[in-house]
Image (tube, rainbow over all chains, first blue to last red; front, side):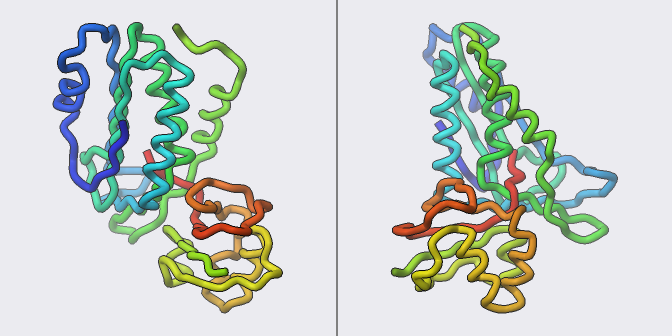
Length: 155
Length: 85
């Protein structure tokens, strides 16, 4: 499931909800991304996330579908926020559940790597030096490469 | 035929608009043609699309390369590389 929202989310409550009533889950992994107060030597007081309503949901659903094809996921949740956030605020949450931990860990990493290079979000940072758009990182593109290599998904 | 053009992040800031409905000339067949045509519309567009190679495009909300044909598209978006997550 995916959610794109302005509001904050409760990590514990989201994990509890996903696990509620399930007796078949063996491993539940979560990743949370949050706003830092410094980046590239600059002080950050605010971060605004713009997105492309409609396409964002489509891309996140596509990425989730791809993860479900590659790994035996029993459940999967992606929450991504937009709007204006401050350091310490949560930006993104990914939860994956599978019978065994390796698939849950790998799928969570895959989802984050794909999300960072294809979900249409743009970050603008504001601080004492003014505002600027965050530039995409080559390391994010490189992170994708390893998922392209032939290999078998964890059972 | 009319198409909706959408602009995001610094592309939006430089063009000065977030979206517009527009009729394209028949000579505009691909995303690259469209970028070239947009650049001829005025200084804001010329500046927004100056670094055309870094600008990403989506046709009907799907990422596409610049050589993609746009015939039949109803929505075309231009934006910088994404930075979510």
